[in-house]
Picture (cartoon, rainbow, N blue to C red):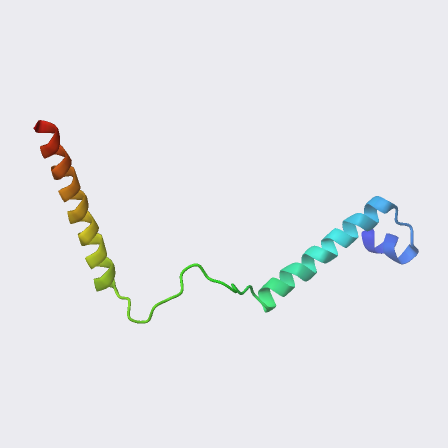
Length: 79
């Protein structure tokens, strides 16, 4: 139906806006699929030597440090 209107040049401004929006959407989707997106400045730059051992070590360090700080605060409030 819309194709017939296009061929017969019987479009009003609302139809034209709709066609332009649909066309733009189709082109944009195709571009995203074909080209993809690149991040110029990634927040987390991967470090080749970082491993799960490093992550677990930092996690354990923070856990122990927080436990120490809580114990230190509880001892100073008792005095």
